[in-house]
Amino acid sequence: MPARAWKRRGDFPVSDSEMPALLERLGQETGLTATTLRICLQRGMSNAAEIATFLNPRLDHLKDPFSIKDMDRAVDRLATARAAGETVLVFGDYDVDGTTGAALMSWVLREAGFKFDALQPDRFRDGYGLNVAAVDAASEKGVRVLVTIDCGITSFDAAARAKELGIDLIVVDHHQLDPVKGLPPAHAVVNPQRADCESGLRMLCGCGLAFYLARAMRSRGRDLGWWPVGQEPNLKQHLDLVVMATAADLVPLIGDNHTLARHGMEVLKFSKKPGVRALLEVAGVGGGANGTGKDLSPSHLGFVIGPRINASGRMASASLALELLTTEDQTRAFQLAHELETLNKERAEIQNRIWDEVRTKVDAGLAAGKYVHGIAVGDPAWHEGVVGIVASRVTETYRKPAAVIAIREEENFGKGSVRSYAGKDVLAALRASSTDLLGFGGHKHAAGLSLKAENLDAFAAAFDTAIGNLEEDEDAKPLLIEGEASIEELDLRTIQEIERLGPFGPGNPEPIFSIRAAGRDHRVLKGRHLKLNLVGAAGLANVPSFSLRQPQGPAPIEAIWFGAAEKEELMSGGAWQSLSEWAGVPELNRFRGRVTPTFRVRDWRPIAE
Ligand SMILES: [Mn+2]
Image (cartoon, rainbow, N blue to C red; front, side):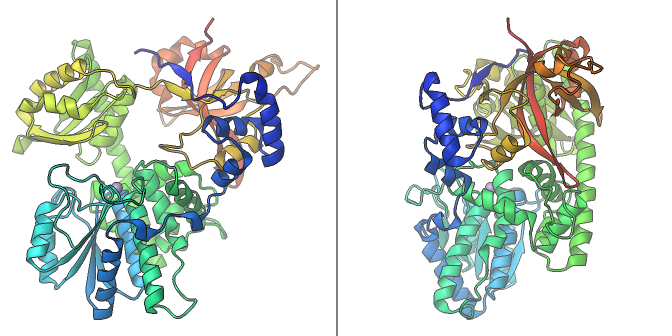
């Protein structure tokens, strides 16, 4: 496998010789360390005021919700529903974004005295989006107002059916419009992707968009006297849901999303929702009398919270997670949190088993000369709910685009997920190999497909060729690093400051530093991950430790390298035990109230001569 190139992220606003003076001045103005300031400067902040705004983004600077096209129409119709005592049906997608969005709407409608119901499609039975059957069922129950969250923008048949049945459909979705068909025939389409929407809020996820609807409703409700003066609901408390969705949906963490995510993390730590508290506590990242999740860090969103909420929709029905996030009953919350925990463990076991099987298949294929440019594997034993996660892992390990397909043998049918590597346009590759497919869709980085099981081998060959014919995209990015740092620079104070620049994700990437160090005391965790200490040059100089002259050299930094136990070629050589270069993310490890610096390794290489 080719080594990945490392590249400095960006340029500083001044020349290298002017940097010390600039860092000195900004250090005095902001109180931040030079290491933190270097990150700010490389990200385009150029003065103390800009840095302060980014470190302390304010909710009252969020954009006006009524700047979103059709928001007024949506809120008018909801106000009429409330006045007439009509039941509002909320229909959310089954992933984290849709589930939290439907939960947020449920809280808001409840607090505003609406009659409402909320439901989601079944991933296995109904598939994605609003479906005609759900509209029919709603109509039979007498529903006249239906609000979709995080879906609906391409549900043309269901929208037409709703219209036919006299249901006013309000689409609240952030997904792209169908370029040919345009808007579905709905009463209101709240979607910042609309060409005629000038809000500039295209970056919002579905739950984030629901939060703007909630803000618009509160504003209207205040005018209409929905609450006694001064007793209107505090919407900020629902940012716990928004931050989960914003992280899970991989939307850019800039602009209003940065503000929502920053405040969302704080709200999440002290969430008032019984279900959120139970979820965190059962997952082992909560507990304690004061803050539910005081040990919570942004990485828990992706590694702990997202998978547990998704496990519901992947393994069973998404409604478990929705009930968890909306319940007001402590006991029920813990029951549901335990159920999700069990489902997530099952999901992880299934995923690990499939991963082992996929590796065996891929290694055998590679040995037989297959999968030169792209990998496509399938098996009847693989679970449809986790093939996407496994496909991502295949791309990271083999550094090639990959399709992982779950086969339903008795139906001669396969359904799979495709993930890109190095910016290759997998949708174009699927188009080029579509003669072997029943259907496909998605975007250039991630897509889905279905095929006849008997065509798997033919598709794999066609996909491999198609990927080989693709141009390497501009996005074929090297590992972008902020620059070099010493282990001593990455101290508690600096990492605490760096954390305040987060949460990190698309648009606000986590800062990666390269450090020179040798690995020591390594151990393998759960058979997959590598934990070790990194000792810098200054620390090495003090070994052996019985040296009386300077018994305490600079302390090593604890490091974790996820998935590295599988890099046997690296581990067996032992070169990493000599002074070498490590690229990774400095972060805080919080465990039982103890906070320590840690270095999450992303890549390793020998020192270039
Ligand atoms: Mn979404």
